[in-house]
Length: 374
Image 1 (cartoon, rainbow, N blue to C red):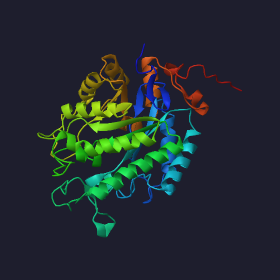
Image 2: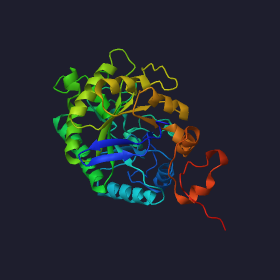
Image 3: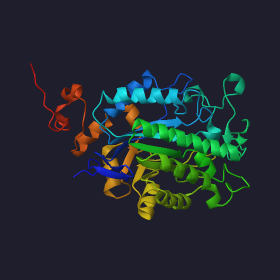
Image 4: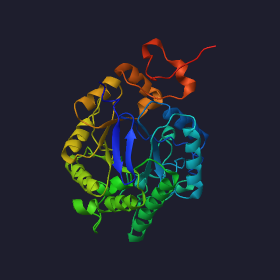
């Protein structure tokens, strides 16, 4: 029997959430807002597609908790009533066009990686005279040589950002979202606090492991108080740089997150510096997820160049993770879950307008769906 197509329950103060299978649509930035942080017709189309993907849960892209915390001027936001209403309305419309599927929202602050151009426009820091803005970080250390350094966040700034995460989580709670994920990976603000590469503070938020994890844990605990659904965090398990954040620290932090009420951990890596040396290959991050899963016992999501159904199944069969996330593969093949079900003998749900679409080799993946002809 395919493990990829077995359900999994995630437990939270709200109760047990059952995912119908172990396939996760990873959060993927679309950089598609009209400079206002509001979800729009692009998101309606994109979300509707992925809600019909056959996955067990769909994760919405990194969503900024403040306007300053956007990666680009076109990033999705959840920092006020206008952005919240646009997200809620667009998601409700998308969900009407698809079978039921749990939805997770990833909330984030870009830190020193903010004020950047869209990737197809080079992705570089945008000067303020061209529509950019001042960025903030644990320490005034630029990402790339020649860039304007970020401003070091002071005590008032730390409190303000923590409250921004809380307010975003309260808006997610009001929407009735199933899951929430804090973005603590890929060189964005919470990861910047964790990594000695970006955090060289001399106060209680820098230096030792306890100090560098203090702010991310404060934010997580504050969010846990106001959001009663499934809550987790995405972490970079390694900076892939000597002297950077590493797997052992990630494992220890995951244990602390579990004690603080985390219901899952999403294991990625890298992103803190262009000096990283990543050994990229199929499933190159899975060993991180395996180590954390067995050391901590928290439901674990593996991600990173997992592209084929048999490959995803093998991760679960080897007990290396509890769920498997795919990103770019779902952009290229929005029905990847259907193909995986056909390959592995699983079943998925699809909206009725698609029931007649299946080729002979995929017959039966929609279960008992019946098609009448006339």
